[in-house]
Amino acid sequence: MILAITNSKGGVGKTTTAINLATSLASRGRHTLLVDLDPQAHATRCVLEGEPERNISDFIMERPSQAFRAIFESTVPNLDVVPSGPNLTETAELLSTRIRREERLSRALEGVSDEYQHVILDCPPVLGILAYNALIAADQLIIPVQPGVGAVIGIDALLDATRELRDDVDVAYRILITMFDIRTTRTNAMVEELLEENRKRLLKTIISKSETLNQANLASQPIQMYAPSSRGRYEYDALCDEIFRLRPR
Ligand SMILES: Nc1ncnc2c1ncn2[C@@H]1O[C@H](COP(=O)(O)OP(=O)(O)O)[C@@H](O)[C@H]1O
Ligand SMILES: [Mg+2]
Image (cartoon, rainbow, N blue to C red; front, side, top):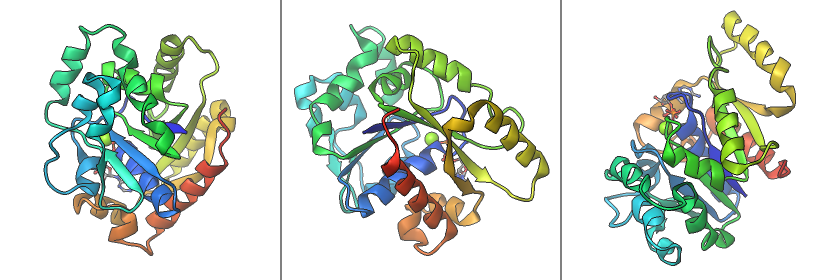
């Protein structure tokens, strides 16, 4: 199953979720591929040492039969990665001149995704051509949302774009609450607001606000390695188990 971790907002926990969910899946013995579509390349730095000679730009710009050459073994057993790279913004511009420009990622993945039980796409924070590629390639969207004012703004635009791109009214998506702080009352009111419209779509697992998760990011490590007995690790493992039980729709 191809999961796009996506939201048109930045700073909501997309990359943190992509990296830690991918690591959880891999540590549960699932052969997993992490595709880094974020120009900031943070997910890549967490699981790959050094500067790879190929990256996501090659993955989507070359012929699909050559896509496998941009896949690397990560430092996590069972986890492979298509790294992001410094030329990704340029690639997005180049892409806009190509035929079927929104389908390039999906075609590249077609040739390789059979090898993997899970493919995780870490999406960029803008709803542009790279995100469109992910929205078309994904079987399911995971939308991280940070509780607070305006948290749900943008979700409708994201879903509308997906429906239009895929000519599909029934997009499979789930909402993941991240950086949840039990002490904030405003936060909890917002969660209730979310529950109203998206009750069926909310994942049961909630990711708490955690300084340890933040520190793991600063150390460029998955939480499973940085703090294996932390709450953040436990919560991302729980998310992983919930993902196992997801049906395609
Ligand atoms: N559960 C969490 N608790 C505390 N800080 C978090 C948590 N998840 C993410 N962060 C921090 O929030 C910031 C944004 O997270 P990130 O995953 O990069 O978001 P995005 O990819 O959506 O831009 C980072 O500094 C990250 O370390
Ligand atoms: Mg990110």
